[in-house]
Length: 361
Image (tube, rainbow, N blue to C red; front, top):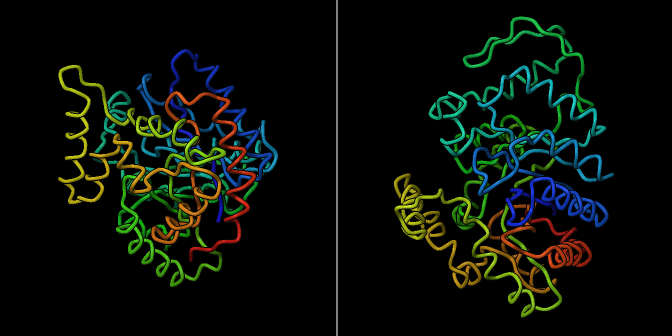
């Protein structure tokens, strides 16, 4: 298995953004010391009450300056928000600055509120994201200047001043549970993954098909399938639960947009209803109960406990959910930094060695 520090870079009461970023670098420096494989961040916009990370290239370069071995990057760039040529340049420069340690997630974006201020259509976001894989391969190809004439991206003639260190391009990821997108990822050699709101028992068959398509496409390396959720490790189960369970049940409150005329749980029900409308009833049930501490603990939607307990829970989840990369959200809610850093250290010292040689597929 592989292990990542994953950060929404939640805004913290009493901290400035600068304070929060400095805390983030301390987290990543410790993760690097402990042998984590990756550091990833999100790209969110326009919610000062939620995530403070709207510039993932800056995250990658700053994280690289504070680490030596970890691979870092966005998970992922919201492709439709960028000029395609400008983003290709940015990725190449970042990979050079990181000396080939950049990982690149590409996503269409899940929140309409990210698109409106840019004057862009939320409905026209998926196919440009898929097409961008071919665009990057053209931009980083041997033929320079390059041209690209797609349905969504066009470049008549451009020569990149800087090419990425990694050829033909940095490793690409596209987090998805959509069967069509997963087929595209397998055919094009993209890593993938999913988030805790998608039930693991429903996820496994889809990712098993992805693995079949991957093999059929002729790729010789094993892909990464990631799973992301909250994690907290402490010396004993009881101490871990005392410190983290209530906080874990508030970890994703930022997902629910503010609405002064409705209660929080009314807004949760409305948000969960959107999953039901798409026929994703398992995800709707998780979303409706995501803020119930007993529910998330009993269903192992978060991993909280001693190193032995967390290692066992994580191994069982990887087997049932068919993932070989764990993206842990270590910093959540108002978790004090002393507890945060102790959790990361215990995870790195005890959980990673226990699972490093485990192969779920």
